[in-house]
Amino acid sequence: MESHLSSYFRCPEEYMRIRSDAPPSSIQRGYFRFGKDTALFGRLAGHTAARYPGDELYDAIEDVRVEDGVIRLPFDLSEVVDNLHREAYVEEWRHGALSGLSKPYYLIRPLLPVGVRRHLQKLYLKGWDKLSFPRWPVDCSIENLMEHLLVLTLQTTGVDRIPFIWFWPEGHTGCAIMTHDVETEIGRDFCQTLMDIDDSFGIKASFQVVPEERYNVPLDFLDTIRRRQHELAIHDLNHDGHLYRNREQFVERAAKINAYGKKYKTDGFRAAVLYRKQVWYEELKFAYDMSVPNVAHLDPQRGGCCTVMPYFIGDILEIPVTTIQDYTLFNILGDFSTRIWRQQTEIIAGKSGLMSFIIHPDYVIKARERAIYQELLQHLVELRERKSIWVTTPSQVNRWWRQRAQMRLVAKSNGWVIENAGDGRARIAFACIDGDRLVYEFEESSVPVSRMKTNPHRRF
Image (cartoon, rainbow, N blue to C red; front, side, top):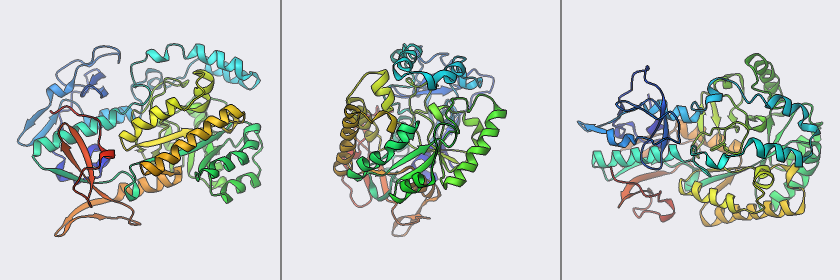
């Protein structure tokens, strides 16, 4: 069975000499560090994990042991990764309940002007900037954990470099996708113009459509999106904020949502308001979901998956939302610039990760907001040209990530070969240490590519 580390890097299992000294199940779960830039949640052997992320966190690196060439961790690697992927640390998620205020709010929400909604949301989100975990504006705890473990593996084994299958096709240094959640009839009618804008920058997007109650969904509207080579995904059922209110209702609604997925011929789904409950995902018959934020300080449901890479929850590929939404930026923070988006894309690019955007056609109709969106698109074009970022669509990310998950590196007499390489777009890369940094280099060159250097690492 593959370890999380070998699965993340798609590297030969023979290099992964890491074992977990799994603590007893009776130990209370809590927060701890693994290096100064990595916060984890789970059970920790030998020390008490903190109850709250804002407490002083013990650094579990101090308890890493090496015995007979095997690296032994004081925690269960699978457990801590899954806890972040599934947001198991969030108390309200754990007990299966959302805010008691959500029901009355969503009953009257359609009647509220944006200004009133904005005021109520600001009150609800007050103190968001004081939250220590996940780390704002992007939390890369899983990426940092994997990199720390790879550095430790390189140092322990003494090998110069470890081969792995690069994260993105054709050697792209990262990935970016644009998505549009269509919330109202006005937004639906603006989609044609929004496609014109996207196309003028050579960018195709995914349009998430609410199938019931919010607005009529004409077949010619759907056909236009497909004909123009943009994509469709299902956006909840009726966008009332109650998809996950209880299990019985969710199962009933999921059946309808799945039927709309077949009717609209799409494999993608996103819940309204980014509500989610991953333990119920088996009811959703979609290839990929786009409902989990990287860090959710400014969302009604707090939490975050703490990764900038897609990952599997059962058979569903989760394509996380890794940047701030336009509505939040403009209406909650009052920031009419691309400053935060640029800050986030820089961090994500430094991890060779996925930049995932939500731009609502409903909120970029006005000239000022539209101009800012166009500035963001120009930024993505520059990243595509200067840094070789793969600007694509969610379905293509899903297709690639599933292909990569089936690939294996095999040693042959003439070097490493990728089995199940599919369409030949996969590339072999190598991880090695350059001073105090983990660097990646492609097979064709022995010179580390500066744009692929990770953040500095302490030596273990």
